[in-house]
Length: 331
Image (cartoon, rainbow, N blue to C red; front, side, top):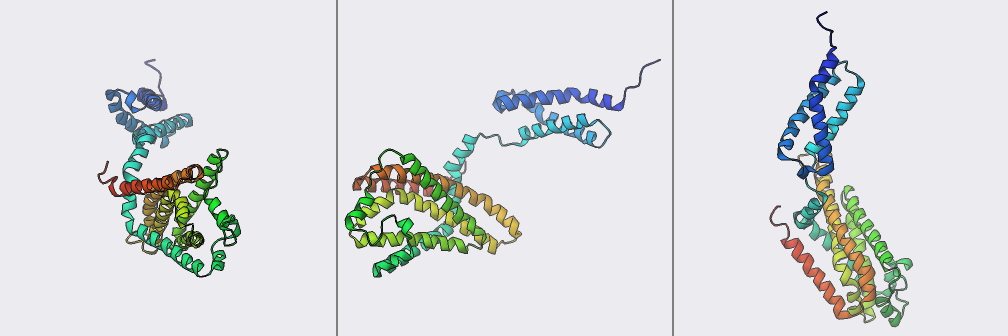
């Protein structure tokens, strides 16, 4: 006999096995060592090997080749796809780019929404302040007993003053800071999420947040504790309230695209703006983390008015410089 007949499936595997093996070895090396750990000539082979394997997979799917071979090629192509097309930047590089460029740029891109968000909160604060100043009983329209925690019109001057300089000690400060961060970030994310309801709940929530601040401010001003009150609020409030305003602005931007999607479909418009505003909320959550640490630790142990006001001024200056100057040049 001149020779035995070799089945087509066997010849198919033999002719291409070397390519698949080379690709598998290369992908495994990149997965373990990263792109930087592979020589340039090997990397140059990667797209060639990938395309050849994808072509083989197409043939395998359209023929009667065994299921085991198809499963192997599908798994290999999936791994190679991630290596070829996944971002080549590390998580650290992505975060650095976001903090040094993207976050500030996105905030500037919605500056009018930020302005509206801040104005709504200020209007709420001014309305509540005026109403409580006119009649202290109106305080309970904005502040529940649980929220007040003894800071109400029935409290004496000494009780209100001591609440601004309470020394919580070292025990539980980090737990308290974590609780504050969780609460504040929940409020911020909720403010953003409500934007899909045409932005109206966002405005109401911003208005209510301003009213809470305005009502408490009126109480402490009425008792002659204005300087002490602002020394208590501003060190963390500069960062916290700014972050809440940003979340509100992101929600308003979402609401705008729900009402006015432009040339895109409503879902397509939401998908585009959602990615951008999601980054705004992510940056705002970082700000709320900072504010939670200041509120839960610094404010509890530092009682000096000059130091508190200095801290507030430093934060205000840093945030202004950051959002005005950072990211003017694209990375």
